[in-house]
Length: 65
Image (cartoon, rainbow, N blue to C red; front, side, top):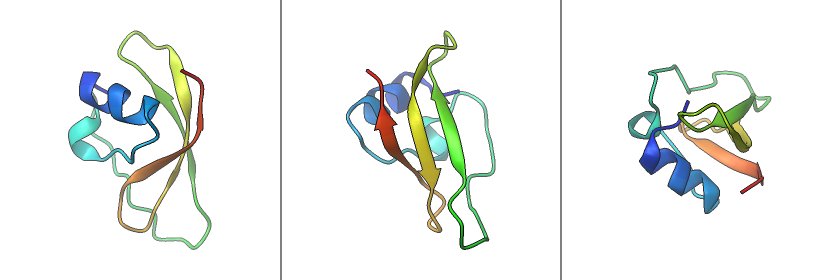
């Protein structure tokens, strides 16, 4: 779940990180294959799909809003 700041950043295609999450999670992906995440706002609405980056950030690859 993204907080208000994270939802705004994701809706503009910006990377999101730990500070943008309403619920803490481990974002770093040690593997070579990107992991896909659903980006949800605090109401549970799907905002888009993101891929994890080795830097620990999530990069939106599909934005629905």
